[in-house]
Image 1 (cartoon, rainbow, N blue to C red):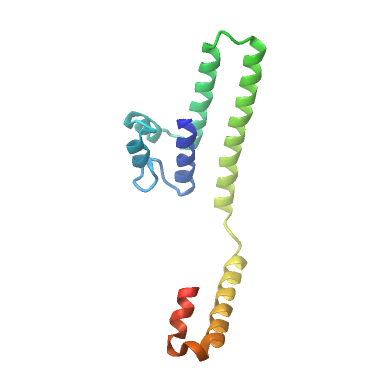
Image 2: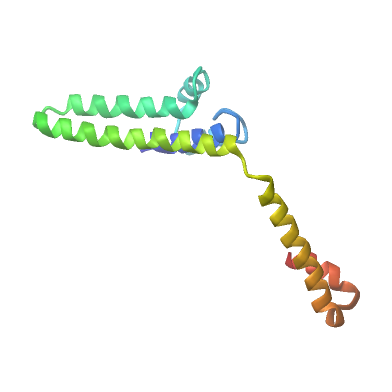
Length: 146
């Protein structure tokens, strides 16, 4: 369960263009809460690849070790569990890939233009609509509402 939390923080850091060890990315917060140790944080920070993929590999290793250590289950149950966990881990890997594609693609310029135009129309219309009641405080009220 801790690896999934660390994975989420690594994804956030990756999408922001930094690493888990950066002061704004929550590595120190995870240390304070006891989710990760300093040695683990250092190990993740030294990875040459992307940190979320390191967490995925660690999840895969933990699941494999847990299934190998459990001798009480039948072989077919181990294979089914291994397959189910592998599918889940693959979906996590696909999700970080999708997030990175969205981040690098960016939004079209038209989206910014629509947002700016809508804000300007709202500001002008609100000033005209509330002008009699608000008087000179009208622009301040509109900025607060906006």
